[in-house]
Length: 314
Image (cartoon, rainbow, N blue to C red; front, side):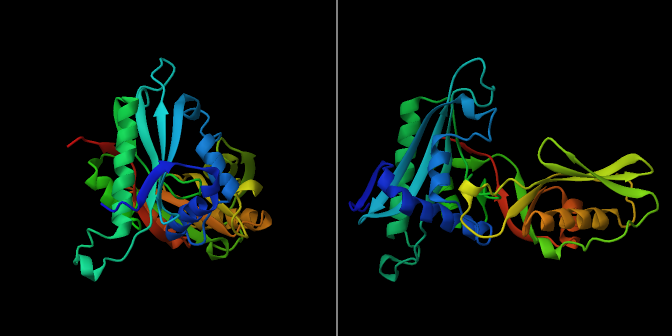
Protein backbone atom coordinates (compact mmCIF):
# COMPACT_ATOMS: atom_id res chain seq x y z
CA UNK A 1 0.00 0.00 0.00
CA UNK A 2 1.09 3.54 -0.72
CA UNK A 3 3.32 5.09 1.95
CA UNK A 4 1.90 8.51 1.03
CA UNK A 5 -1.38 7.71 2.79
CA UNK A 6 -1.29 8.88 6.39
CA UNK A 7 -4.07 8.11 8.90
CA UNK A 8 -4.32 10.27 12.00
CA UNK A 9 -6.87 11.82 14.37
CA UNK A 10 -8.91 14.75 13.10
CA UNK A 11 -7.38 18.21 13.59
CA UNK A 12 -9.40 21.40 13.56
CA UNK A 13 -7.58 22.65 10.48
CA UNK A 14 -9.15 19.68 8.60
CA UNK A 15 -12.64 21.11 9.06
CA UNK A 16 -13.11 22.62 5.59
CA UNK A 17 -11.83 19.60 3.69
CA UNK A 18 -13.80 17.24 5.91
CA UNK A 19 -17.00 19.24 5.38
CA UNK A 20 -16.41 19.15 1.62
CA UNK A 21 -16.05 15.35 1.81
CA UNK A 22 -19.26 15.05 3.87
CA UNK A 23 -21.19 17.33 1.52
CA UNK A 24 -19.98 15.53 -1.62
CA UNK A 25 -21.39 12.28 -0.26
CA UNK A 26 -24.61 13.94 0.95
CA UNK A 27 -25.25 15.64 -2.39
CA UNK A 28 -25.00 12.31 -4.18
CA UNK A 29 -27.99 11.14 -2.12
CA UNK A 30 -30.16 14.28 -1.82
CA UNK A 31 -29.66 16.87 -4.58
CA UNK A 32 -28.00 19.99 -3.30
CA UNK A 33 -27.86 18.70 0.28
CA UNK A 34 -25.09 19.68 2.63
CA UNK A 35 -24.17 20.84 6.09
CA UNK A 36 -22.23 23.82 7.38
CA UNK A 37 -18.77 23.45 8.89
CA UNK A 38 -20.21 24.15 12.34
CA UNK A 39 -22.82 21.44 11.91
CA UNK A 40 -20.22 18.85 10.93
CA UNK A 41 -18.01 19.78 13.87
CA UNK A 42 -20.92 19.77 16.33
CA UNK A 43 -22.09 16.36 15.14
CA UNK A 44 -18.67 14.94 15.99
CA UNK A 45 -19.07 16.13 19.58
CA UNK A 46 -22.65 15.06 20.32
CA UNK A 47 -26.11 14.45 18.83
CA UNK A 48 -28.59 16.43 20.94
CA UNK A 49 -31.46 15.21 18.74
CA UNK A 50 -30.67 11.64 19.81
CA UNK A 51 -31.68 12.31 23.40
CA UNK A 52 -32.00 8.59 24.22
CA UNK A 53 -28.89 7.05 22.67
CA UNK A 54 -26.45 10.00 22.69
CA UNK A 55 -25.96 9.94 26.50
CA UNK A 56 -24.94 6.29 26.16
CA UNK A 57 -21.81 7.22 24.16
CA UNK A 58 -18.59 6.94 26.16
CA UNK A 59 -16.00 7.86 23.51
CA UNK A 60 -15.93 9.49 20.08
CA UNK A 61 -13.01 9.41 17.65
CA UNK A 62 -12.70 10.92 14.17
CA UNK A 63 -9.95 9.60 11.91
CA UNK A 64 -8.61 11.24 8.77
CA UNK A 65 -6.76 9.66 5.85
CA UNK A 66 -4.52 12.24 4.24
CA UNK A 67 -2.59 12.05 1.00
CA UNK A 68 -0.34 14.89 -0.17
CA UNK A 69 -2.03 17.26 2.30
CA UNK A 70 -5.48 16.33 0.98
CA UNK A 71 -8.18 14.68 3.12
CA UNK A 72 -9.23 11.73 0.93
CA UNK A 73 -11.11 9.64 3.51
CA UNK A 74 -12.57 10.04 6.99
CA UNK A 75 -14.49 8.05 9.59
CA UNK A 76 -16.28 8.82 12.84
CA UNK A 77 -16.40 6.14 15.55
CA UNK A 78 -18.44 5.77 18.74
CA UNK A 79 -18.06 3.52 21.76
CA UNK A 80 -21.17 2.93 23.87
CA UNK A 81 -20.97 2.42 27.62
CA UNK A 82 -21.30 -1.00 29.20
CA UNK A 83 -23.68 0.11 31.96
CA UNK A 84 -27.15 -1.07 33.07
CA UNK A 85 -28.85 2.15 31.88
CA UNK A 86 -27.67 1.58 28.29
CA UNK A 87 -30.04 -0.24 25.94
CA UNK A 88 -29.12 -3.90 25.58
CA UNK A 89 -28.38 -3.71 21.84
CA UNK A 90 -26.06 -0.72 22.37
CA UNK A 91 -24.33 -1.92 25.52
CA UNK A 92 -20.56 -2.28 24.98
CA UNK A 93 -20.94 -1.74 21.23
CA UNK A 94 -18.60 0.04 18.85
CA UNK A 95 -19.94 1.86 15.80
CA UNK A 96 -18.34 3.42 12.75
CA UNK A 97 -21.04 6.06 12.51
CA UNK A 98 -19.89 7.08 9.06
CA UNK A 99 -17.09 6.07 6.71
CA UNK A 100 -16.39 8.23 3.65
CA UNK A 101 -13.75 8.27 0.96
CA UNK A 102 -13.22 9.78 -2.46
CA UNK A 103 -13.68 7.27 -5.27
CA UNK A 104 -11.14 7.32 -8.06
CA UNK A 105 -11.27 6.03 -11.58
CA UNK A 106 -9.22 2.86 -12.11
CA UNK A 107 -5.80 3.59 -13.55
CA UNK A 108 -5.34 1.64 -16.74
CA UNK A 109 -1.71 1.15 -15.80
CA UNK A 110 -2.77 -0.61 -12.63
CA UNK A 111 -5.19 -2.98 -14.36
CA UNK A 112 -8.91 -3.00 -14.96
CA UNK A 113 -9.81 -3.83 -11.39
CA UNK A 114 -8.26 -0.62 -10.08
CA UNK A 115 -7.03 -2.44 -7.00
CA UNK A 116 -3.97 -0.22 -6.68
CA UNK A 117 -5.61 3.19 -7.13
CA UNK A 118 -4.96 5.78 -4.45
CA UNK A 119 -8.57 6.15 -3.39
CA UNK A 120 -8.92 2.44 -2.66
CA UNK A 121 -5.59 2.41 -0.85
CA UNK A 122 -6.58 5.30 1.43
CA UNK A 123 -9.95 3.73 2.18
CA UNK A 124 -8.40 0.38 3.01
CA UNK A 125 -5.78 1.95 5.27
CA UNK A 126 -8.46 3.97 7.03
CA UNK A 127 -10.75 0.96 7.49
CA UNK A 128 -7.84 -0.98 8.98
CA UNK A 129 -7.33 1.88 11.43
CA UNK A 130 -11.05 1.83 12.31
CA UNK A 131 -10.95 -1.89 13.05
CA UNK A 132 -7.81 -1.39 15.12
CA UNK A 133 -9.55 1.33 17.17
CA UNK A 134 -12.58 -0.91 17.74
CA UNK A 135 -10.17 -3.64 18.80
CA UNK A 136 -8.48 -1.37 21.33
CA UNK A 137 -11.89 -0.58 22.77
CA UNK A 138 -12.57 -4.33 23.22
CA UNK A 139 -16.21 -3.82 22.26
CA UNK A 140 -18.70 -6.69 22.28
CA UNK A 141 -20.07 -5.99 18.79
CA UNK A 142 -19.16 -3.74 15.85
CA UNK A 143 -21.45 -1.84 13.47
CA UNK A 144 -21.03 0.52 10.56
CA UNK A 145 -23.47 3.12 9.20
CA UNK A 146 -23.48 6.15 6.95
CA UNK A 147 -25.48 8.60 9.02
CA UNK A 148 -24.36 12.13 8.21
CA UNK A 149 -25.64 15.36 9.82
CA UNK A 150 -27.77 15.90 6.72
CA UNK A 151 -31.48 15.00 6.42
CA UNK A 152 -32.12 11.84 4.40
CA UNK A 153 -28.55 10.50 4.54
CA UNK A 154 -28.11 7.35 6.62
CA UNK A 155 -27.29 3.68 6.18
CA UNK A 156 -25.24 2.91 3.09
CA UNK A 157 -27.10 4.33 0.08
CA UNK A 158 -26.89 2.51 -3.23
CA UNK A 159 -25.25 5.62 -4.72
CA UNK A 160 -22.17 4.94 -2.57
CA UNK A 161 -20.90 1.67 -4.12
CA UNK A 162 -17.32 2.72 -3.34
CA UNK A 163 -18.14 2.86 0.38
CA UNK A 164 -20.08 -0.39 0.34
CA UNK A 165 -17.20 -2.21 -1.33
CA UNK A 166 -14.78 -1.22 1.44
CA UNK A 167 -17.28 -2.00 4.20
CA UNK A 168 -18.02 -5.45 2.81
CA UNK A 169 -14.35 -6.10 2.17
CA UNK A 170 -13.65 -5.44 5.86
CA UNK A 171 -16.10 -8.13 6.95
CA UNK A 172 -19.25 -6.09 7.63
CA UNK A 173 -22.46 -7.83 6.58
CA UNK A 174 -25.84 -6.23 5.94
CA UNK A 175 -28.16 -7.58 8.64
CA UNK A 176 -30.82 -4.86 8.72
CA UNK A 177 -33.48 -3.37 6.47
CA UNK A 178 -33.54 -1.50 3.19
CA UNK A 179 -35.41 1.80 2.99
CA UNK A 180 -36.31 3.99 0.04
CA UNK A 181 -35.59 7.71 0.36
CA UNK A 182 -37.93 9.91 -1.70
CA UNK A 183 -38.09 13.63 -2.37
CA UNK A 184 -40.79 15.95 -3.69
CA UNK A 185 -40.56 19.59 -4.62
CA UNK A 186 -43.25 21.31 -2.57
CA UNK A 187 -44.73 22.72 -5.78
CA UNK A 188 -45.06 19.18 -7.18
CA UNK A 189 -47.38 18.07 -4.36
CA UNK A 190 -51.13 18.12 -5.04
CA UNK A 191 -52.52 21.64 -5.14
CA UNK A 192 -54.64 22.70 -2.17
CA UNK A 193 -58.30 22.41 -2.95
CA UNK A 194 -61.76 21.76 -1.58
CA UNK A 195 -62.36 18.71 0.56
CA UNK A 196 -63.31 15.68 -1.58
CA UNK A 197 -65.95 14.50 0.94
CA UNK A 198 -68.70 16.36 2.81
CA UNK A 199 -67.79 16.94 6.45
CA UNK A 200 -64.01 16.54 5.83
CA UNK A 201 -61.92 19.18 7.60
CA UNK A 202 -58.31 19.61 8.68
CA UNK A 203 -57.04 20.40 12.16
CA UNK A 204 -53.46 21.37 12.98
CA UNK A 205 -51.73 20.25 16.19
CA UNK A 206 -48.27 19.61 17.57
CA UNK A 207 -47.35 15.94 17.26
CA UNK A 208 -44.47 14.00 18.82
CA UNK A 209 -42.29 14.56 15.73
CA UNK A 210 -43.51 17.83 14.25
CA UNK A 211 -46.57 19.68 13.00
CA UNK A 212 -49.47 17.26 12.57
CA UNK A 213 -52.21 17.94 10.00
CA UNK A 214 -55.20 15.83 11.00
CA UNK A 215 -58.01 14.95 8.62
CA UNK A 216 -61.36 14.81 10.44
CA UNK A 217 -64.52 13.37 8.95
CA UNK A 218 -67.71 14.21 10.81
CA UNK A 219 -65.67 15.19 13.90
CA UNK A 220 -63.65 11.96 13.90
CA UNK A 221 -59.91 11.74 13.19
CA UNK A 222 -59.41 9.56 10.10
CA UNK A 223 -55.86 10.34 8.91
CA UNK A 224 -52.89 12.57 9.50
CA UNK A 225 -49.53 13.59 8.10
CA UNK A 226 -46.85 14.88 10.45
CA UNK A 227 -44.24 17.26 9.06
CA UNK A 228 -40.85 17.95 10.60
CA UNK A 229 -39.99 21.45 9.41
CA UNK A 230 -37.06 21.87 11.82
CA UNK A 231 -34.50 19.94 9.75
CA UNK A 232 -32.83 23.10 8.44
CA UNK A 233 -32.04 25.01 11.61
CA UNK A 234 -30.11 28.23 10.86
CA UNK A 235 -26.79 26.88 12.13
CA UNK A 236 -27.09 23.87 9.80
CA UNK A 237 -27.86 25.64 6.54
CA UNK A 238 -25.57 25.05 3.58
CA UNK A 239 -28.15 25.88 0.89
CA UNK A 240 -30.96 28.33 0.32
CA UNK A 241 -34.56 27.24 0.68
CA UNK A 242 -35.67 24.65 3.17
CA UNK A 243 -36.23 20.92 3.55
CA UNK A 244 -38.79 19.11 5.68
CA UNK A 245 -39.68 15.46 5.98
CA UNK A 246 -42.76 13.32 6.44
CA UNK A 247 -42.09 12.30 10.02
CA UNK A 248 -45.24 10.19 10.21
CA UNK A 249 -48.16 9.29 7.96
CA UNK A 250 -51.33 7.49 8.96
CA UNK A 251 -54.11 6.73 6.50
CA UNK A 252 -57.26 4.64 7.00
CA UNK A 253 -57.16 0.95 6.11
CA UNK A 254 -60.25 1.48 3.99
CA UNK A 255 -59.26 4.11 1.40
CA UNK A 256 -61.33 7.28 1.20
CA UNK A 257 -61.47 8.69 -2.32
CA UNK A 258 -59.28 11.74 -2.75
CA UNK A 259 -58.16 11.83 0.91
CA UNK A 260 -54.37 11.42 0.41
CA UNK A 261 -54.28 14.04 -2.36
CA UNK A 262 -56.31 16.51 -0.31
CA UNK A 263 -54.25 15.91 2.85
CA UNK A 264 -50.97 16.46 0.99
CA UNK A 265 -52.51 19.53 -0.60
CA UNK A 266 -52.99 20.86 2.92
CA UNK A 267 -49.37 19.87 3.67
CA UNK A 268 -48.26 21.83 0.62
CA UNK A 269 -50.21 24.87 1.80
CA UNK A 270 -48.46 24.74 5.20
CA UNK A 271 -44.99 24.10 3.73
CA UNK A 272 -45.30 27.02 1.32
CA UNK A 273 -46.24 29.33 4.19
CA UNK A 274 -43.14 28.06 6.03
CA UNK A 275 -40.86 28.70 3.04
CA UNK A 276 -40.11 24.99 2.64
CA UNK A 277 -39.39 24.01 -0.94
CA UNK A 278 -38.63 20.27 -0.60
CA UNK A 279 -40.19 17.38 1.31
CA UNK A 280 -38.44 14.10 2.10
CA UNK A 281 -40.25 10.82 2.72
CA UNK A 282 -39.17 7.27 3.54
CA UNK A 283 -40.64 3.83 2.87
CA UNK A 284 -39.50 0.37 3.93
CA UNK A 285 -38.54 -2.13 1.26
CA UNK A 286 -41.72 -4.09 1.96
CA UNK A 287 -43.96 -0.99 1.85
CA UNK A 288 -44.68 -1.12 -1.88
CA UNK A 289 -48.15 0.40 -1.58
CA UNK A 290 -46.79 3.40 0.35
CA UNK A 291 -44.01 3.91 -2.19
CA UNK A 292 -46.53 3.83 -5.02
CA UNK A 293 -48.78 6.28 -3.19
CA UNK A 294 -45.92 8.69 -2.57
CA UNK A 295 -44.92 8.48 -6.24
CA UNK A 296 -48.50 9.38 -7.23
CA UNK A 297 -48.32 12.41 -4.91
CA UNK A 298 -45.25 13.87 -6.62
CA UNK A 299 -42.35 12.14 -4.85
CA UNK A 300 -39.32 10.82 -6.71
CA UNK A 301 -37.11 7.98 -5.52
CA UNK A 302 -33.61 9.19 -4.68
CA UNK A 303 -31.93 6.05 -3.42
CA UNK A 304 -32.37 2.82 -1.54
CA UNK A 305 -30.26 2.68 1.56
CA UNK A 306 -29.16 -0.40 3.49
CA UNK A 307 -29.33 0.03 7.27
CA UNK A 308 -27.71 -2.23 9.82
CA UNK A 309 -24.20 -3.54 9.09
CA UNK A 310 -22.57 -5.92 11.56
CA UNK A 311 -18.94 -7.01 11.60
CA UNK A 312 -18.26 -10.70 11.21
CA UNK A 313 -14.52 -11.24 11.77
CA UNK A 314 -12.81 -13.24 9.05
